[in-house]
Image (tube, rainbow, N blue to C red; front, top):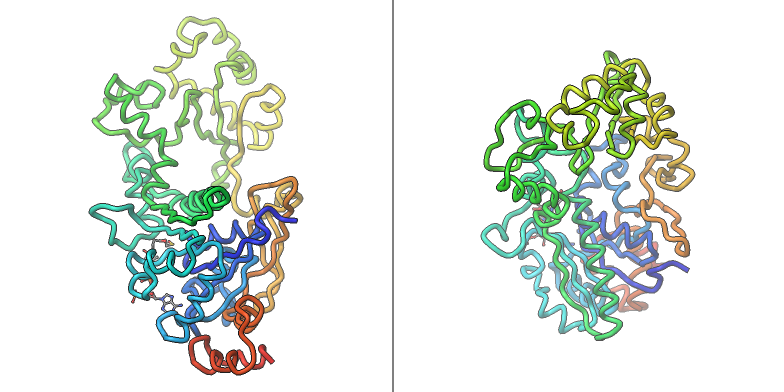
Length: 424
Ligand code: CAO
């Protein structure tokens, strides 16, 4: 059995934020029914195409383990089918532009009338307020949520990160909201509205930077490299390069081969508890007892010089050798892994975090499996659905259409064409 077995999700999501949420719920056992515009589908199906004619990796990697029904929710028969889906599903998840569901005639009030037990979960760019009507994509959320202004180097422009904290991060927040609302429904019998604004999700992930904003009022942030370098602080949390975000100083350092390999680097943390080991490893045993070096607070104004010295040592080792030497001594280090290295990692394959998936249009492709492991709810990653692949199956098996009634819906134009054969 799977954790969310028996839960039906009406997946009205597109692009990345919403689909990552429903994909997770599908992996945890929910029956996820993806509703897509007839003949068009989720726009990502045909974005960043690498295999002509096939669904893109963009789409296939965000929509595993789902079923797809084509449905025009603006046509009368389409609205009838959507109403039946709302009646039968436990959760409706959507990430349309603000107001789109209302314009379709499915306001939260109407949805509750149809099914008071349903949970309606939405991703929007912003919460209620002056920006609530804006359309938002990943990088806009990173900028509005405080990530961009605090990422990058002090002397450079704000930077967006490669991690999709606006889209996939918000999808995670929304998934937690949904399972929590399902749990509450067990007690109350009622559904509720769940909202995860992308700005708020990014800010939640940038919590430590808001912490630093307030600490600034008490004086300079002395664990930031700029403190030791004598560069004055302004009135907002600065960009900290690769400094550690926490109380243990750390930095990205060059390793052997860095001149040719853009990823020959390691992260190196000088945790107070293992300082003496660090001193021995890099050949500075005198620093264990030297004034200005022995105690963590004394080191803060010399971090740049200390890391320069450590880097002299890391440059003589590969990033993997650094790990092999430091790990047994409990010195926290981590190689900078390229996507190529990650894709070939045996360990990640063994745990199902990297998976090979078969697809009828693409052949085999590599994807990221479920990153959350439940000991009693196994995950089997299956391919994303073709557009409308399950239209007839859902109309018949989930919504109970048959005979003339089924023919009426299939002929209405609301569910795309050429679904008759599948229904026969
Ligand atoms: N049948 C009929 N119409 C459908 C439909 C269906 N099955 N599915 C969608 N539509 C319609 C919508 O109702 C909407 O019509 P109206 O404009 O008349 O209301 C229209 O398609 C377009 O929807 P949209 O405005 O959501 O899509 P967009 O491409 O213009 O905007 C996005 C995309 C992502 C900017 C916007 O949806 C958004 O801001 N979403 C919330 C934030 C979010 O999730 N962003 C992350 C995106 S991933 O980086």
